[in-house]
Image (cartoon, rainbow, N blue to C red; front, side, top):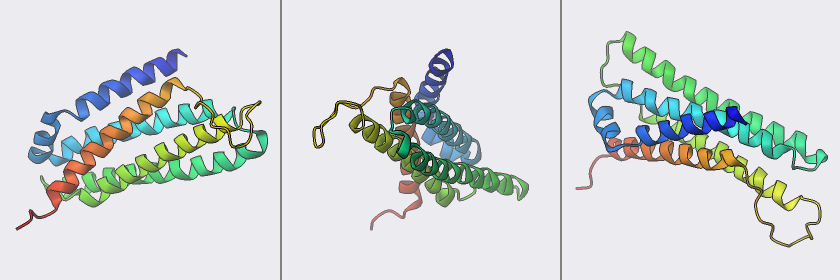
Length: 175
């Protein structure tokens, strides 16, 4: 439980600082350095999603757990690869001495992957909630409360806000 509390505190701190108005100015001034904030937030989202998923998985019927694990593993690998692609792009820019690399596409992939992981965890939560003993078919069930879910939602929102800012700046202004 202490690990969960620590993860929550770290992730919340990252999401608050990474989404501040100064982050956008930092990104415009030094996209390589500011991208690290996005990656830290995305990695925190991945870590919190893993904690949340494993808390929820036990609520699923045994026959659904393997399929849920396979889906989560696939989404997690996709997110890890997206984060690594950004790190590789940043490294390549540094080696090329490019102070203002175009990181739009790789950051968008990270944003999409974080959203996909979050959506998958939410769907697992909903499936687990509906699978609880005593649940009548077709009866809406109150979602299972998992403390880390709020942190995951915050982190995903932060990554989305950051990648949306990058996307809007990459598109030419309407004439």
